[in-house]
Structures are given as structure tokens and as C-alpha cells.
Amino acid sequence: MLLFIKRLFAWWDGATLGTLLTVSRRGRKVGTDEFGNRYYEERRPSFDGKPRRWVIYNGYADASRVPVAWHGWLHHTFAAPPTEQPPQHWPWEKPSQPNLTGTIYAWRPQGSLARGGKRAPAPGDYQAWTPEGSASDA
Image 1 (cartoon, rainbow, N blue to C red):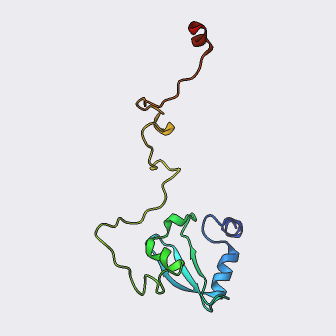
Image 2: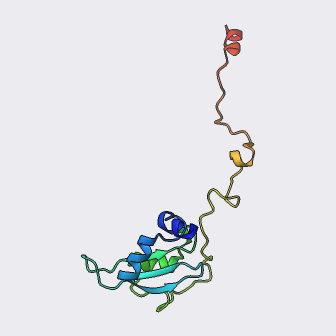
Image 3: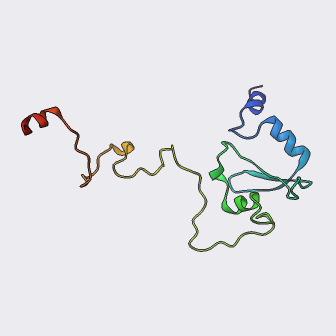
């Protein structure tokens, strides 16, 4: 029962029942990526002549979890999906990873509040005005 309610309302964690129904009626499965995301394409092209393309996330819906090759296919940059025509990988390319912002693995530069807010003084640092300092100047 809980899974049914979750599928009915929780779009951020997988697909809702409405999305699954639409995809099953109008789409055909094209492939799956290394994260377990499933990709679909509309059986008949839309009004502009291009078929719509969908991704159903495996778990939390985060666009940064879509690999580069599948992103290009979703946005009609590549005509063929990576399952039919794998993209060329260069030795300098790093593997795809999700967005780490907001997690404990996020990059925290020196001086950020998450690292204690301590940094070396800079020449352009602001010096706050204090009334005690102005009385001694007079």
C-alpha cells in the first residue's frame, strides 16, 4: 500500500503512476545506463516531427545522474541511442558522477563556512567602523 501511495505522489523518487502509464502507452524502451536509469522514446513523432524522449530515474530524480551520451540522445544531439551507437571515449574523460552539492562530498573551498570560515587575511578586507575609534581621532 505504501509503494502505491509513493508511486502516486512522489515524482522525485522514481516515476509516478501517471508517468508510467504514459510511457507504457506512448513509448518504447530504448535502453538502460550504468546507474539503472531507463530511457524511452515516443513511438510516433510529436507535432514538430521529433519523437519525445524520457528518462525514468532509478531512485532520486537528479539530472546530473544522466551520463553524457544519454544526455545527448535525450536532447536530440545524437540520433542513435548509446546502446546502438556508443560514443567515442577519450583517455582524458572522467567517468560521469552525480552532482555532489549539498552532500558531505561537496567541494568546500578554504574560508567557506563549512570548513570553519577561517582564511588568510586579504588586502581588500573590510574594516568595520566603531564609535570608539572615531572618538580617539577627534
